[in-house]
Length: 413
Image 1: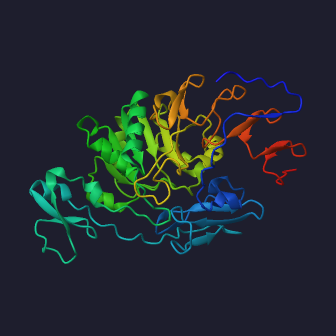
Image 2: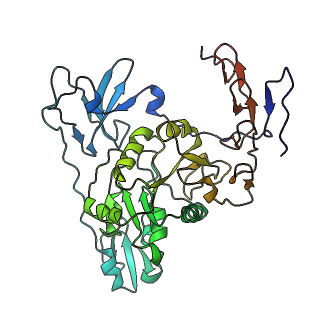
Image 3: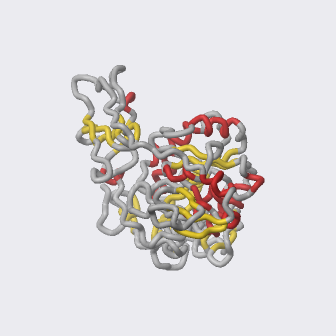
């Protein structure tokens, strides 16, 4: 595309891309939109040495704060609604919290030695509720699934993903998304993979003999204890950084992982700065670690604010079991990564290689020679505003009063 001229005295904006339909954004309520922030207790002015951060049944709590009213309370790090976890402890006024208000965590089931059982069975039946296997269809009081051939069955396929619209909802990537992610990380020169909340990617790597000792899974789902051993899995809360099981196994893996990539698929409603702090603390010993996150493009400003070296990849991530994001046309989810963007080679039907950016972008994302990038976040039409010195959506107009571009009638002055 030739470099466009912009010498018209009355036209401060010019089109950069053709019009296209705007992709829908999920109707997700974020605490950040409501002004709720997460703060470190020790950084509060009235923090005392005797204070102990309380815990709920899901682990150590976070300290939430309303800046305008200075209201502060400890709440569950895992769940957002009172229906899922009603625990709430107000910040103490006039004295410390003397004792941890820890609620006994639900007893976790012992690891089911499925691998050992299956080795002795040419075929088996599976109980989804107990996460156990049986030789006989009538050997258990729950209804069993099967028969399955032991040498042809992927155990992860037997575990149904959580699909509730809550913190632990699980959506499986399509095989194309996994392959693109894998190829791109390899192209960057990374050799080891830490999968945080990405059991599918972990299972894909574990199936390759050359990567069995180079991959590790951290996940909050206790069901994975039934199918993965302590050399490959720890129960972990990616928000508060708590290990629920097998921290030693993770430490052992980290010691041998020099060229490490962290692949994380967090909940969309996650507090970005808390997540990034937790993950950075995990790999403090490995400063050359790179990250790949899967999050909607409209969370980009939160990500870039906390980790400025992140770049967004134009690839629209699709899921096997998500009601809305089964096609690239509808998915707002993207890879955000510290890896070089040129490592990501995207399929040609929806993407192209931009020679000016030296990276793959959406076919509808046209290069802007003022921004020196392909600036559209979702592939929709944008235009360059000379006053703002950036590209904005076509429906935005420049407001001279607040000196920024926004929707009509939304002056920020």
